[in-house]
Image 1 (cartoon, rainbow, N blue to C red):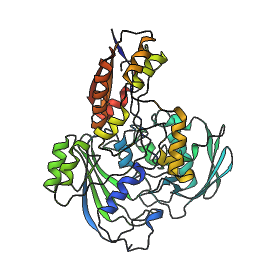
Image 2 (image 1 turned 30 degrees about the vertical axis):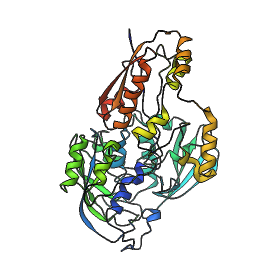
Image 3 (image 1 turned 30 degrees about the horizontal axis):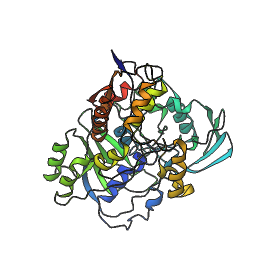
Image 4 (image 1 turned 90 degrees about the vertical axis):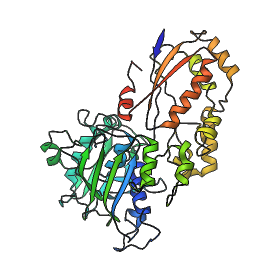
Length: 436
C-alpha cells in the first residue's frame, strides 16, 4: 500500500526577502558608498551614488501572481518587497526597524501603536494615510484576498486610526511574535483601497500588477517568464541606484550559468551549490554566501497513517544524516538545525554561542543512527515498512538531493520514499493536501 503525506520545506522569510534583493541591487553598483542624496543605507537609503541603467536578475523558479498574500512563494516575496512595504522591516542584520511607520511602540501586551511617516507616498504620488494602513491590515487579514497570510492575523481584533498619522493594532491575546506581522517580509503589504477595488480584489496579475510605497513599481509581468520594474522618485528612503530591474525566470541551472557567462544576466539568486565552482570560475563573477535565517525540515501530517505513530516519526528522524547533508550537499555552507528557529534570529539578543546552546537544548541530540531507526520502526504499527511520496520544489535542488539520500537510508528500513520535483507554485499547493 502507498501512503501519502506532506513532507514540507518551511522557510522563515523574516529578515531575508525584504532586504536581500535590494541589497544585491546596491551591491551591484560597486564599492562606492557615498550617497548622492544624503540617504543612509541603514534606514533604507540606497547608500551609493553610482547609477546603473538596467540590472538583470535570474531566479531558478517562477510565479503566477505577484501578490504574496495570494501566492506566498519565496520569489513572490523578493519581487513584492521592491514594490510594497509594511509598517516595519528587517534591516541587514535581522533587526526590526521602521519602514512606512517612522516609529512604533508596544503600549500594552496586546496593543501596538504606529506613527506613519509624513513623507510616505505611493508610487502614483498620493500620500499614505492612516486610513490606508487600516485598510491594508484588513486586506492582509481577509481570507478571500490574502489566503496565504490571513492566518497570521487571526489573533488581531482590529486596527483603527487613533490620530492623523497614527494607527493602533489590538490583539485578542498577547503574542510576542506579532511585532513581525506588519512586515512585508512576513504578512503585510500596504496599498490603496481604490486600487484593489478597481481590480475587483484580484491584484498581482499581469493586468493589475501592484501599487505600493516601495522604491520600484512593476511595469510588466509575464507569468513563467519574468518581471520588469522601474525606479520611482516617491520613495521615502531615497533614490535606488538602479533605474530598471529585469527579473528572468530561468529554471535550468546550466542555462543560468551560460546566461551569466555571456553577460545576459548580472545576478543569479540561489545558485546550485554543486555548480558553485563553475560560477566562481566565471569571469567578472563573485559568489556570495550568507546565512538567510531559514531552515529545511520535514513536517509530518499526523492525521495520516502511519505518521500518527511517534515511532515512525522517530525512525525517520534517526535515518536523517544531517551532518552529511551539510557537509556534502551544502558544501559546508550551513549547519545542522536543532530547532525551527535559526541562531541568527535570536543571536542579537543573547549572542551567537548562547543562541546555539539554547536552541540545541530544545530537542537535544538526534544523531544519525540506522540501528536506532530500525528499533523505532520495529515498535511501530508498520514494523515491516511502507511507501510514501514526497513533493519537492524544483527551485531547491539541495532539498531534492537530501530527500534522495534519505530515501536510500530509509530503504534499508523497508520504507520506500518516492521523490517528485515540481515547480514551486505547484509544490506550495501540495502542502496540507491529503494526496501528498
